[in-house]
Image (tube, rainbow, N blue to C red):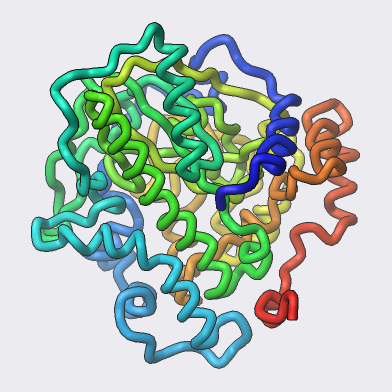
Length: 406
């Protein structure tokens, strides 16, 4: 959700409480990569496994996908899961789905299993910049103008590339063609509509996710074409090719949270990330700290509220639940199988952990920017207590969303 300049300026003040770290060492970005670390195959992603693995693929998971891909026929007669809720949710996914389905004849699902590919060739002549600082300023200006809510830049890190991609045709692996000569990664953040998230779990709240993906596709394609028009290479990537969360953290956009998501000082947990791999010379941003790690260690909000009990209230560890977890990293890890099984049960994504997270609040408001400063200080228990006593994070009935303003 791209915002006006006044709101952007107010949210940028929330970042004033952020501390930039001197380098991108493992500990500074919120997780420690051990010697036992193994690269992750997209074949083991829980959504890919739901296509072929009997431990995950069930009649419920098929019904989950059908509610997105086929003409609406079966919906629940329950508030938040009625026909108009699904009708709106599916409409918000339309742009992202169009890009995904255009290349299915080539064994591709652009943006989900493969990089976005609908780009024109650029000129042979490159525009040379005076410095990486100058080129980064230009890229960030262009990104914000075409709709990016957040943008950070970091170096290519092979650890986060999928060791192989997933083929829907063979239901097995295929090569990942992202090469390390694309030495820089631009990370784009798209905020999700907080009023829709407030209705989670519901089919209606899934519209926030759909809009995030559709807007992400448009921004990534536009910015990538701009980079190609400057004479450089650019590969726009959504869920494909590499893990987005480590890149977002290394690009200084936020910290890693207990619920396995990135928490930003501008939008809290309510944000989605895309990335662009490029050989354009750029200045790297630094990881940041603003109290998320310390708050997550004392907060149990997402663990208590998770309908599938997929978020343990434990300290960061090297523990994994199943093959859909990245191994060899000390961090908070969620049970992706349990999480996705709940999604399949309710026929939409959940987002309760995003709604309930204390950091998910409107930072255009001065009181919430003040709360963020307190949360990042030694008074964080006071900030947490205030949040628990407030009405923020409470589920809103979907009928109130539909009748809002009438």
